Every structure is written in structure tokens, then in C-alpha cells.
Image (cartoon, rainbow, N blue to C red; front, side, top):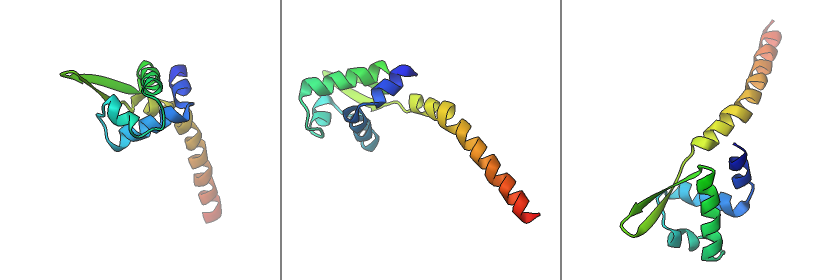
Length: 101
């Protein structure tokens, strides 16, 4: 999970994930056209995202397509966000009961 947080810490990598969210299955060239960054920098960012499990790749002929893998982000939500939301929901329910009484 640490590698996912490190990967998400960079704004360029988040921009790549947003681009894949908008249109999944893009090539390196397509992703490069959306960022004001060199091809080498985009390749490096994609490699970090792949290592974190946030991007999956598939070769179709000579082209390499990149796909968003939302599972690690879902795991972060389950682990770090959902547990705090439960307490907030319980507090709202208790407030509602108190006000109704």
C-alpha cells in the first residue's frame, strides 16, 4: 500500500490516472499528448504506476496499451476512509435519535 501512496503523491501521475479514467486503454503517445512532459518522464511515471498496481498494460501487436486498475485505490478507501466515515455516520445517527427524543 505504501507504493500506492508514493505513486499518488505526484501530480503528474495523478494526471495520468485521470486521463486513463476518462479514456481507458491509451498508448504512451496518446498519454504524452495530454501532458506537458517529455516522453521519457511519462514512461517513468507509468512504470511507477505499474509497479504500484495502479496501471495494467496489454500489448496489441507492437502497441502497448495502459489501463487503469482502480483496485488499489478501492483498498485505500476501504482501509483509510471507510473506517472514519463509520464513526461520523454513527454520530449523526446518535444526534438524530437525541433530537427526536
